[in-house]
Picture (tube, rainbow, N blue to C red):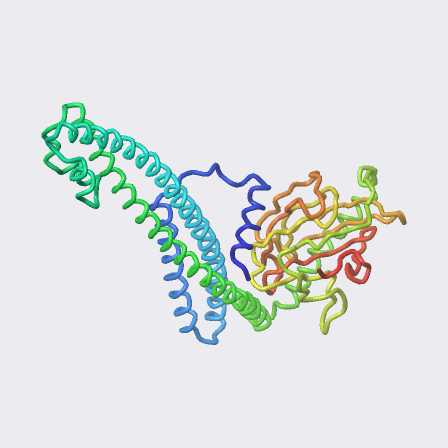
Length: 404
């Protein structure tokens, strides 16, 4: 996984939905605050791991284990957010340092030109004094390798006018400023190098945390199922989830039968892959060992919080919570050339959708939300469904989407 690509994608989505704040100067305090937040979350993670390791197989402890596993999931998700924010803050810090280095170098060039002009004036004055016979021009101009230093320190200073003395004083000030600015450039350069090294280390840690989170999603889900089976509530829970999905299907059917629901545009016949950052399918449409899977699950390493885009042009008809699908949204794409109404559904989003009911969306350009693990989910992924006249169909077999 390339962290830079992930950050760029995530930030572009944030900009598209206008959640980015006006950029401001990054202070050491703001970056340090993020580092402190990360340290606190790591400490909390360690405490949760220790607490889980001390639990027994009793029902009470298993209930507590499920709770603490969910707390661990939340902790790791918060860590990933803090990591991304810290990396982005350091990125801005590096950019500011590089801008500061550029500005300082420009200022040094200006000061060096001013210094050269002053020295040229002094050189002419010293040469003029030498012509009086008191000093040899050759001795004055050639007896030292550091002509600038000679002008500022030699006894010839006692022979020149007040105006020349002012030039000397100005030259000394400009030389001190140049020296200081060069020192600042080196300090900024060293700080930028250190920040880049820290950033690379954090990016490596992010990959590790994503791997931990993937495993933890599975563990937390399985422990929840085990507990439900032990308590005898598993079948009842599954039925509740089925009813939650059926309720949405009924809503869709009712919508299609209303006059307003029949007023739609035309589906243009093409769809794009809704999560461009990954290209793996973790579960296909169709009958499985003990259930029927009604959609296509799109997955990839570290997919959590990756942007989800509209698969085709259309209008948002649902953007809400469902116990089975978690945070989800649904888009109406209109009627195809065969008179069939085409819709798509995007489930298990990390948080509420970025779009709202009635909003027009554009294929591959409108961000709908970010990938998550909400609802009845075993891990972060996008559960993608295609509907024809309110009936779910195989998006791959029907040719709506193709694995990139």
